Length: 228
Image (cartoon, rainbow, N blue to C red; front, side, top):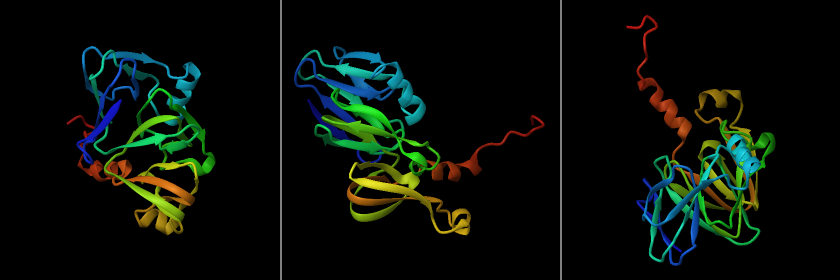
């Protein structure tokens, strides 16, 4: 199976070209853009009911996932994330794990195990929850962002705004802390940061969903309480 990254980095999309019958891709519900008619699609609870419920409740991912299976060579499948942003690929070897912020998982080959990881109080990224998505190989993993994806190779320490974290390798440890004191927290526009330690790759996104929400809020129409 081949894959091509298209429309990067603003409106990322992935084209899969199947090379043999039986090749498959597991994707988030609603990620499909288009496919050949003969590509089979099955919707199910990946890992069973309890595993799916845990991913939905704790990791913010879809309760159901779709599996697309080729029936002949040369068939194609297109998938894309919901937000305007980038897509990235990582080939995981057996036992290798990658951690993703909630909502960043897009698709994977069937051999990749998708689960949630308890991060304790240090694990919440800008209110998205206390859990991370854990993807373990072997297989191909595809993840997405809001805005472009920028890789950072950490060789000691690195600080990232919590709302800009996409994912990171298992070799990195982290803690969430405030920027400065209470004055900085409320007046600087910078609230919480994630401080990484160790060696490994980190992926950040160039845009912040919460910052965009705060920017657009004053432009929202407000309905008068009188009904006028």
